[in-house]
Image 1 (cartoon, helix red, strand yellow):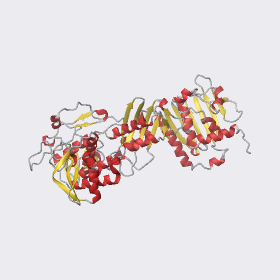
Image 2: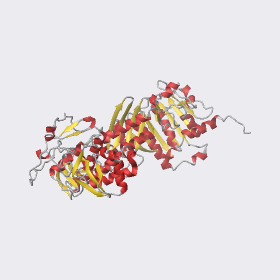
Image 3: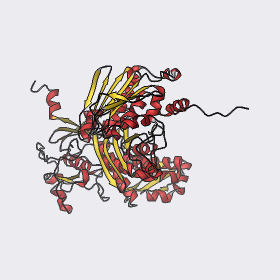
Image 4: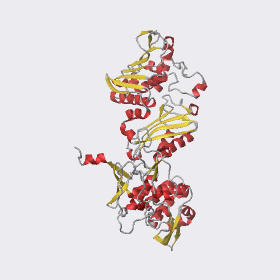
Length: 606
């Protein structure tokens, strides 16, 4: 019978080190967290051979007293928690008391520190029976780790190449630098200085770490509700890439990979990303420490929320509202609209004098009067008789009259400017204060209809438009049976479809928003969805997909000639529509060429 024996302390520490010390980057992360918890304002990191040969972290924190140096290298010894209540409300990055002991068991560790107010520093080697000895140090602490896994070669052979290990170490430094923009960080490798980050505000630190391009391509996120708050940046959907590892999320200053938050981000970006593009974010979530458990993973990269549904809804709605912001003027790095706040106009008559667009924090930017014949058009008016929902202006020019050209050469122009012409019946060319705007009219109208359909469906106010002449199309018996079975659901969606003979169906009414589309094509698409997915799933999980399909069939088609008032009406509606920068499939609806880009294209000034 096998004998049960107590393991030696060294073996216990080496087993525990396997959970904490995965690679040099995990060592560096633990040491940096200790430096931040010590109140450091400057942290210097020196690496050799990707951190395998040497990791040295120097800080100017509070330091460690001489008599506590040996205790700091003991397992489960910490100054950060003392009771179960402290554990349930952890407010520091480190708290388990295992990092230094685990590192000392698999590497050669030296700890030098000078406590504030003492005459000199002390150094202790992480060896059995070692005693503190005097050391030269101005202030703070220096932790030096050499020869990782020198005593456990089986683990060392699992390490990757030097470049790979260094890349992981650099990522660890950058992540913690993002959480503390008030702390200066520097990193050197093999004697070469790689970067120095001076104290800065959060936006500047994000730009320094993730790049200026990320900040320029991102939208500012900010929200608070009860014990939850979120801040940071989320990539503009039109600037997203295929990189899958672009989500940097922190919870109470701790970098985490959380499934709840990750799913909320995917859902927030669901119908604004094209193809395989991925959401990229840098978000900081703050929550009452009592509502999150950070002690569920040895490396502390996973957390458990007490109310994960509330966190999911909070993150989802915060990011979704940011992405839903209508087209506005350019924003600065802090994410605030450059336009001044102005009171919104009231009444229908106001639409003839100003065009308004909602910006961040609900502010409205007011633009100069449009031409009288370019007044705002009522896309949602069910009684509109034009082929397109947006094609009837409140004050149209006389037949054959060429509208005068509206210039947009000042900062008071609307974001999308004023229409100049139509290109090949597909694109709208417009001029704004910054240059030339190109709009894909089908993609833009598709998004406008989609958002209006969602709003109408949510409020159960889907207005219908009866057809003067029913649209009759051939149908198989299964389609006819689907109409009979789901007549009530079809009516809720704004359709009235009835059998018209043994092998035909007739569309007698359609949603008013889609009256410009092909009724037969709309009906076929709808019946196909009902047959494939059923009513219950269609009205819940796949509802938005169905509405997107309906909007696609109802939007203006290519080669449709539009007048200037119609084009300007579309531009104004885009400025007031959420997520107007992307169509329902995630494709961009508009693009802009600045005057600087045009000058460069034609070599002006060169």
